[in-house]
Amino acid sequence: MAFDLLHANKLAAATRLLEAIGADRLSRARAERVDAIIAYRLLGNIADTPQQALAAFARAIEIDSNDVESLLGSGWITLQQDLPGEAERRFRRALSLLAGDAQPWNRFRVRLGLGSIREQHGELPDALTFYHEAVAIGEQQARSAPGDTSWRRALSIAYEKAGDARAAQGSLAEALDAYRSALALVDRLQQFEPGRPTWQHPMPGLSIKIGSVLAARADRPAALVAYADALALAQPLAQPPARSDPGNRLWQGVVATCHEKIGDVRFAMNASAEALAAYRTAIGIRQDLAQSAPGHIAAQRDLAGALTKAGDVLLARGEPAAALSSYNDAFAITNRLVDPPPTIPPGCATWQRPLRRSALLRPLRATTWPR
Image (cartoon, rainbow, N blue to C red):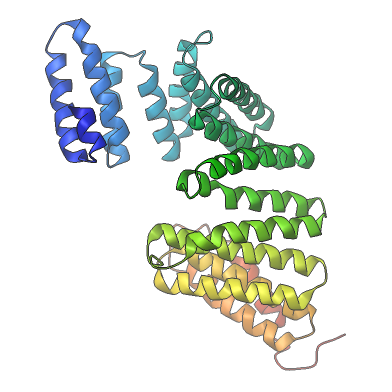
């Protein structure tokens, strides 16, 4: 009955039923407490808020402290809440209960979780050990069940995480291989089920990461191709009629990032006109996003960053007055960010970069620029 309600997308009714099942089974024989654990797990998975999910998983763990799925589910939530110590405690407990080849999905999940925590702590070799173990599990499962698309998607995530750690290490060739493996998997899934968001959404980000690695290797023409691919993938996701939708805003931000990345490469190739055009396109998008959400710090920060990059190009082109105007626009934004909000660390370089640029040019104003 609960599954029927879930399939009908009647979450509130399913939640009430599962709560009743959990309470009822707890009052019965121990053998029937398995039903209560399952009910609380399901409640955790469909909960509206992290707090509700944690409460449901906690009830399951209270019944059985060795319930691996609840340990992992609550571990991922605490990790998303920026509580890596508590998340690791839960993951380590789950890992100790996962012996042999049973429960491949849980063995995979726990290694991704532990790898993410090690990566956050800067312990990249340990992170890579967990990621490579996750890749091995995913590859085995993908081979044994070639029609199971969920394992192919999971494997692409493991490849991507390994690529992130490799890139952070400076192992760019290995990072590139990992990102390309992840993208190839998702691309095949997209071809199998065109238009499915689960397969569409990871592709622009992976293409951006590939472009960034290629740019770091000074392979700028290939980086431009990767960024253009990312832009082509992201633009359809950012189109009307849902431009005000939060998810759509995210994709507009991705489109702006693609233009900025293209501008970065063009600037490095001394193609200043093309770089400036790309930055101005990004600025236009970011201005719309910042104006529609004036309290959104990331949107304001990203706009200031794009304005600063445009100022850098204008400065290099020998246009100090235009550069100063762009820097001052960035300065006005960052000045608002570093002053009132108490949550922004004083002296944060991210906010101060446009301030330094503006201060450098302020004495020049409309005077001649030294050549």
